[in-house]
Length: 406
Image (cartoon, rainbow, N blue to C red; front, side, top):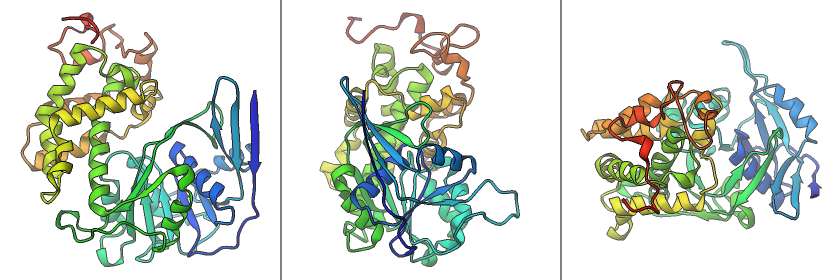
């Protein structure tokens, strides 16, 4: 049984200063677009489509983005419409953009996969300048750096960058392109990232008075639980999320398990503790600003990193990580912006990272069929668990559950 409400609004007039453009309509992109429209019916919002086929799905689903809240008794569906659409298209090299507008973009939310970000922004770069604001909503770190290197090398003419850390639970329903399942509450933490964090040049959090992007996110707080924070704190939040993703996401793909099963055996816990104490922890601590107060820096101690990752795994126990979902479908993962980011930084600091290096190298060898042999496992064609190739010194046929005594 389902309860459905659909709200639409007339398309607003094109107003570059107030229009919010959204690039990337995965779960998080849809979630934010829906919330912005729900709490501001007159806000001009433009969805950017890269593929013409998306237009057909958009028409089929009533030109709305639908939020689904599931319960045993009732599935509550809320659709929001009134969005403008621009088609960017997959265009041949040298072809002009098929975008329905070539006007300036003042407020852009980027929710693409990290590895697609720089390429996805290419058709828009001539519409972005120092008066533009870009919010990056992504896993890992380093995507905005690639955008700067490729398209905005001149810092004086670069857009203002914001990062968003979203901890809401959002999943995809089958066969519905423009719907999402709102599975769990969590804040959206937003702060500027284009300032010199290491020198703490700016202590100030963004204000709704700054621009239309920040104001719109603030007005959607009843759903997004928006928290505006200063550059240092958003950087710390990025590092925390990077650590959690580096611990949980690759391991779910390697073991073929849900988040809650990553810490499920003594063998897995030993691997995680070794990974943190020898590689992830030492690398992260070189990324922490020296001026960070001890009470904040403490969260990057080995025991705290382990405890935080374990808490997140327990809180999201039934979830399949995005990395596991990608490997199951034979898609590219964001490993290069998670473990890859740490690996590159460790190399600069001459920190040994053999486990991280090995995990990155072997992740690309996982085949979707490895997950089909046994539920909750990743089994190779030879019948061996894939993890035995990553950590060959462990007898994976005799995993001991954490509840059992060694």
